[in-house]
Picture 1 (tube, rainbow, N blue to C red):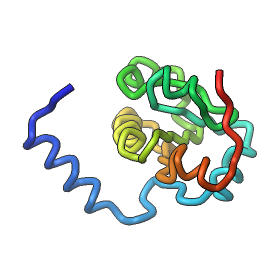
Picture 2: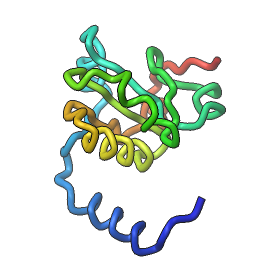
Picture 3: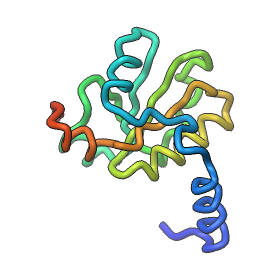
Picture 4: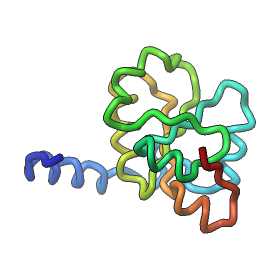
Length: 125
């Protein structure tokens, strides 16, 4: 999927200008604290095959390309954390959810790679 270079550049510039901790959970302990709450939701925005190959326990798979069709299923007052492989897709998902009024949406930039590198468990399905 190719997009306009101007749009891609604008997105990159926007993301680079955001404060380091803006709508982001940057550590595994912080993520675990959020997930202890029963009103939190962890979303893996990777593809179905990526999710099946290994995901963070408790995560649901809503690939980024269909996230917009599932917004109504996410209550506006629910804490939502998105992750992917590198942080790029989850950042896009956070922006999309923010635009849809889900202001408690956050990304987990360490993503699945950081989770695995820390020796945390993954589930394959």
